[in-house]
Image (cartoon, rainbow, N blue to C red; front, side, top):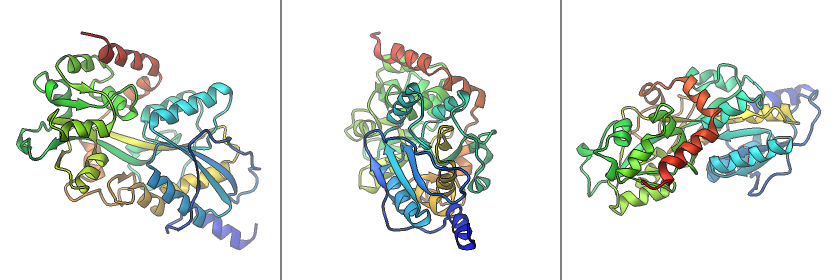
Length: 355
């Protein structure tokens, strides 16, 4: 490979400027990885990305990849975290992962795939800036972005000083149950992860919450609507969704709890990749300064994993502050990740069965 191509390969891994062209996005199942000779260090060929990132983020990433990795065809399968997990599980049941790279806000999925040996460890230069709490000890995955569960309330109906400042109290104290709207842990990976953390692995509190009158169901949009309609006083939602509603002029007040649950959006390479050189280049791009700027979203309402990126808003804590608000035992997450069927059965028993 000549000097110009070597310089380009380095530039690809450390890409720092945005671009203007697009990538291919598939709403059905991609055809799967294409095997490319690994002895050629120039990133090229097809890379399939399974992701739960928002469409505007994946579109921007595709444009950046076209600029920084012109010989790579980035194919994106995009959907909610549960949809992505189901697609990947179906792939693996059929014998091989259909993705080269995974970028999903489901920390339990990352840990489950690591435990079953489905991930290819890789150290990206961009990971050096990221807090060690967001980097897998064995380099199987690393956070590319971070979501946070916040408490939303109607500013014209609820006084700020009456909003609970601790998430554990809001979800487990019977005094608040009838005032709470919470997402469906059966269909939302973020709601399931939050339940695991708040309950420390015991999801029976969901049953008490429901019996106390809480609304448990739907996604973030449903929860926000219940708050804005006055049906419930407090909604436990992703901070990024509450910020978007506020930016649109909705009367949404936001409290980031003192014990906020932080949800890493991990990026990883599947061991079945037929194109490891290009897959690594895509991960490098996602973790580069330009890629991390994209992870904040076009309106900057999300936290990138790189702390050098600005927080979403002036009244939102920075990433270091958020990570210090709650310490989560890795053993808890690793156990939960390998007991997914049991967790979902616990949710069904707590939420769906009649009192």
